[in-house]
Length: 153
Image 1 (cartoon, rainbow, N blue to C red):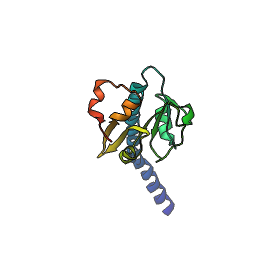
Image 2 (image 1 turned 90 degrees about the vertical axis):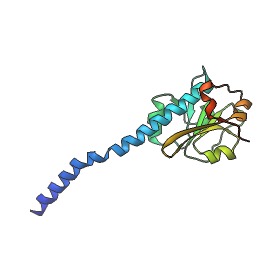
Image 3 (image 1 turned 135 degrees about the vertical axis):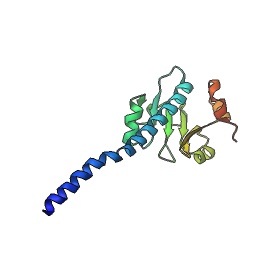
Image 4 (image 1 turned 60 degrees about the vertical axis):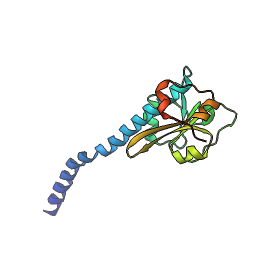
C-alpha cells in the first residue's frame, strides 16, 4: 500500500516538473539576447572581417548559443573580439589588435584594455562604449551607437 502511494506521489511530481522548466528557458533566452547584442557590436566594429569570438571561462550554454551565430575560438590568440564575461582578467598578446568588451562596469572603468561594457542592470541590457578608447583604436561606429558612447577618463 505504501509503495503504491509513493509511486502515485512520484508520478504526480514528474507531471508537475514541466511547470518549472521555464526557468531554464529564460536563462537561454537571456543568453540569446546577450549574444545578439554583443555580436552586433562586434560586427559593427570589425565591419567586413569575420568575427572570431573568445569568451574566457565560457560556460556550455554560452558555447551553444554563441557558436550557432558566430565562430567561437578557444584562445585569445585566434580571436579578434573578446567578451570577458566570467573572469576579471584575461591573458592576451598586448601587440595584437584586439577588441575587448566586458560585462562589468567597474572593470571597464579600471582597465583601459576594454573598449566598452555590456551588462545587465535591473533586468535590462546596458551598453557603454568609451569614446577615447574607440578613437585610440580607430573605431568608427554607426550613428545608432551615439547614445551609448561616453566620455570617460
